[in-house]
Image (cartoon, rainbow, N blue to C red; front, side, top):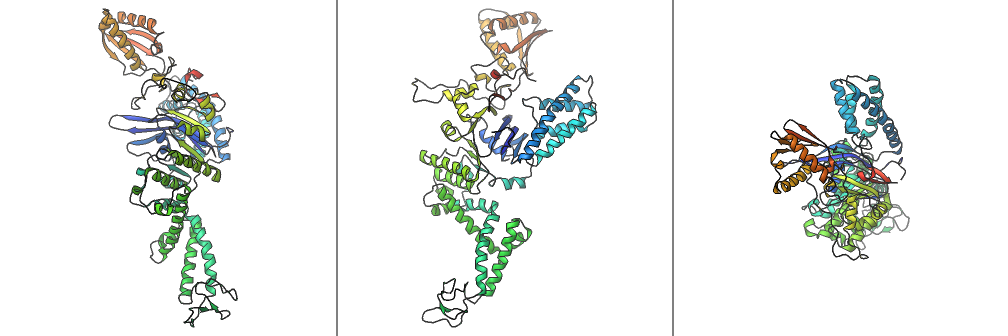
Length: 613
C-alpha cells in the first residue's frame, strides 16, 4: 500500500486503563496500527494482552466504570484529500514543534505556561514517530495560546496544530457524540463478539435480534423497497373490480371496463387488460391509506428520524406502516441465517438463544454483524465455538463480504493457522503494546521480535521431530505493575541493558547475591539496613556509617557479575551520599516502532532506536 493512501481505520496512541481496587490496569499503552481498505488485518497474542480491549476501545464500548479511554485517536473513513492534508500538516508541524521544544529547554527560567507547554512537547517526542494524536495536540494548543516567551515560534506552531485538530476532529471516533457512534456501530463498523451466549438477548428470538439491526440502520433501503410495491398497487385502484352483481354460482366479478367476468383473485382483466386492486367496497378508503403510507415512506427515504414519522409511530392507525418494514427486515434476517449455513433458518429465526447450541448462536452473531454489509468487520474469535467445517464456512463468509462490498476485516484470534490463511497483514500484541506489525508472510517466515519468534517456535510442525514443544519462559506480567521500557524484557532471551530494567529487578538480583555472600561469611551485606526501589530509575541502599564500604562492595559485585546478568549491566553509576549508596539505572523508555524491512515494523532495541531522541 502506498503510504500516502488513506487507510480505512487509523489508530494512534490508544491508551485504555481500568481503575480497580487493586490498582490501575494499564490494558493498552499507546497502540498504533492501520487497517487498509479491502484487507484483512489480524491481531494475535496471548490471553490478556489487550486484543479484545482494542476492539472495544475502537467502538467505545469499554465498560465505564472501571474502564476509561485516556488518550489517542481513532480516525475512520478519512477522505483521501483530507488524509493528504493531515500528512502534510504533520510533516510541517514536527520540525516546528521540535525547534520550539529546544528553545524552551534552553530558556534559563521559563514561565509557568511555558513549563506546561514543554511537558506537552516532551509527550509528543517521547515516541518515534512523534505522537500527534488529538488529545496531545489539544494540550499543546492550550499551551501555545497562553502567555510566555518564543512568541513568533508559537504563532507558526499554533497555526499548524489548530489545522491538524480541525482536520482530525470530524473523523475521530473517540471525540464524536454517542448519537453519532450509534449510527456507526452495527452499520459501518460491526463486531462479532467472543461470547455469543452473553452478547445475545435471551428473551428475544434470533430473527428479531437480526431484524432490529436492519431496522435501525437500513430504514431508507427498506422504505424504497416498500415504495416500489406501493407504486405498483396504487394505480390499480383507479380501475376497481367493483360490481354489485356478483355471479352467485361462480362467485366471479364483472370487469367495470368491458363488463366481462373476472376471477376474484385477478390483478388484471383477462379480456381487456384493465388492472385491478380489490373490490369496490372500501376501495377509496384503501387508496387514501396507501397514499398516506407512501407519503410517510417517501419522507423516510430522506430522513428516517423525521419528526413527522415519530408522530405517526404514536398513532395506532398510522403505526401500521411499521409492520411492513418489520416483515421485510425479518425476511432479510431469515436470508442472513441461510447465508451463514444454518439449517432450517425459518425455525431458528423464531427460536430463543438458549434453545440454540454454541455454534448456532455464534452464527447468529455473525448474521447480525453481516446484516448491514459493514465497511469494517471486527471479528473477535469468530471461530471459537464452531467445529472445523463450520469454521471454514465462517471464514468464507467474511471473505465473500470483502469481495461483495469491499469491506475490511480486523480478525482477533489465537489460531495462527487461521491468520496465515486469511490475513494480509498481522499485528502481534504483548502486554498492551504492539510488538510487531507486517505482512503475514514476512512475519511468519522471518519474525523479528523475540516474542513473535517464541510464538512461532511453540507451534508443532509435522516436518520436525521434537521431544517437547518450545515454550516462552516466565509469565505474562501483571498490568497493574507492568515492567518498564520493553514489557517483554524479563522473559526475553536477548534482552539488552537499555531494554528497561527497573530498580526492583536490580534489587532482586543484588539481594540474591548478598544472601550468597552472607552465607559464605562476608560481613558487608549485613551493613545494608534498607533497600529502597520506590524512585523510578534509582536503587538506594541505606547503610549505618559504612556507606563507602558498601559502595565499594556493590561496585565490585557489578564488575564481576555484569557479564552473567544483563539486568546488572543497566546500572550506569554508583554514588555514595552520606549514609546511602545510590545506583542510577539507564533510562526506562518504551522502544519505538521501527521499519526494519519494507512494510515490516518491530518495537525492539535490537533494530535500533537507542538512545531515544
